[in-house]
Length: 155
Image (tube, rainbow, N blue to C red; front, side, top):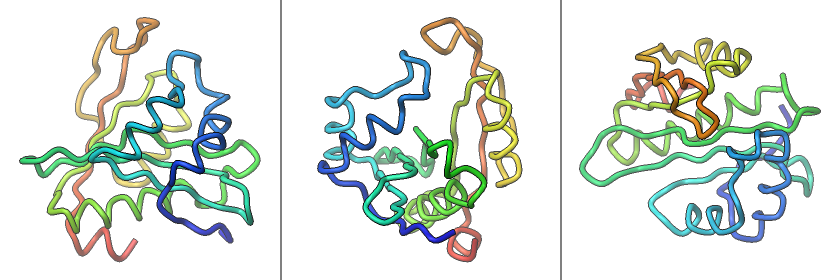
């Protein structure tokens, strides 16, 4: 992987919106949501290939809990298989560990088998299924992973 990982900024929003073009329409973040995520208690990261945003991840953090939520992860189709998702998750988990989190959780569409397999290879395990989770009625697979500090910093 030759991409650089860095925190996302508001200047990245047009590229972030474009990156999600492959998502189902109801799963895409509008500009307003990206602005809120970048200003809130979340942490957003982008992978840069030169001047281009080629992947992104968003983690949500809540005060009073030790659980980080991987809220969104996307990699441009031409960039898949290069370790970008793993690098973004490792960075997010290191940040989460530094904030005192010990677990990462996520939801993924049950039909998104490539993503489910990626998360399983990265150490997530299935917790439960959430029926009718998505606006179109699709079931979500809820997954969890331990993010002990020593694991997060050495991946």
